[in-house]
Every structure is written in C-alpha cells, then in structure tokens.
Image 1 (cartoon, rainbow, N blue to C red):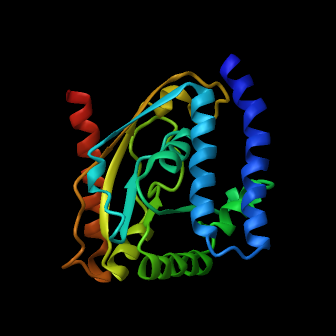
Image 2 (spheres, rainbow, N blue to C red; image 1 turned 45 degrees about the vertical axis):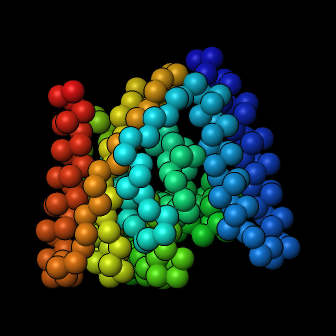
Length: 240
C-alpha cells in the first residue's frame, strides 16, 4: 500500500510535467520533437519504476537493432510491462496501443503527439488504418514497433492467442519480428489490482524471425511461429 501511495503522488505531477514539455515542443514546432519525446518517455517511465521499487534486467538486448525496422512482440500481464519497455528498449521505438489509452487526460494526447499509434480493435476499418500508419513509420524512420499481440493483459499470466495485426505489418514492410517474454511484472502489479509490490522484472529478447517467404496468404503461419517463440522463451525460463 505504501508503494501505491508513493506512485500515486508522483505519477500525476510527473505525467503533467513531461507531457507539458512535449506539448511545448509541439507548439513551437520543434525540429527535435522526436528526441524530446524519447527523452521524456524514458525519464517518466524510469521515475515511476524507481518509485515503485522495480528493478529491470534486459537479456539478449543486442538483437534490438536500431538501424533496422523491427516489430517487437511480447506477452502482456501488467501495466508495468509498458513502463519497462518505454524506459529500457534500446533505440527509437513506437508503441501500438489500445484506443482507450488516448482518453487518459494529458497522457493520451502526449502519446499521440510523439508518434505512437492507437488502434481501435472494435472497428476493423480504423484498425487497418492504424496499421497503415505504423507501416509508413517503419518504412520512413525504421523504429522498433512494440505491439502486445494478445491485445490485452492476461489475468492468469498464461499466454493468450495472438492477433494477426503485428504480423501483417511485418510482412508488408519486411521488418523482422523480435519475440520477447517478460517475467516478474505480474508479481509487481496484477491486472485488476492497484496493489504495487517492489520486485525485479526481466525481459528476454529472442532471436529475430525473418519474414522473407511469408505472404499475406500465410500470415497465420508467422503468427503461430511468433507465439511459439514467445512460449518457448517462457518455458526455458520455467525450466531454469
């Protein structure tokens, strides 16, 4: 409960402060908006994690190549997952987030201003339009696009079915798919709970999956292969 109190009194003013810096850069039409967004996101997420008592360990992070377009897919069990990736994924990155996030005051507009993408999973036409925006970002700037392919946080911690959007995007752009698995974030903060426990979160990045040979017709095979890769990382962790 103490951690929740500390995070609560920090996260609101921190969000307003960093979002205001982004808004000011947008207003001034700053040419370095991208850099300011990255700095603000990393600083904000790192601050919240530090106050929450969360230590982060990245394993095999060298597979993230900031010079190449990549699509990062990982399991999702906690809001802490987003903070960990925002603070520590190497290089430039773009999140594809649920449309509901945009409704969060101050935070939602700042996220959009920084080029992150909202997807409306309940509207197929809008969802496809969002993926098209992500495709253009990959082709123009080659960031790492971060997607939680389950579409929502798992209540049990078990890996859910993967939606195909991330893999359609990878096939369209030729971007490799980087599977990853996160460990420990559910123990820090479970879905549906506001209780925050200090702890360690590990992120293990798997070897990139090259998409050459995959087509839109067999995108389900790529989806299955990526899910299997994430599952295998989880199983190796359980066995170790």
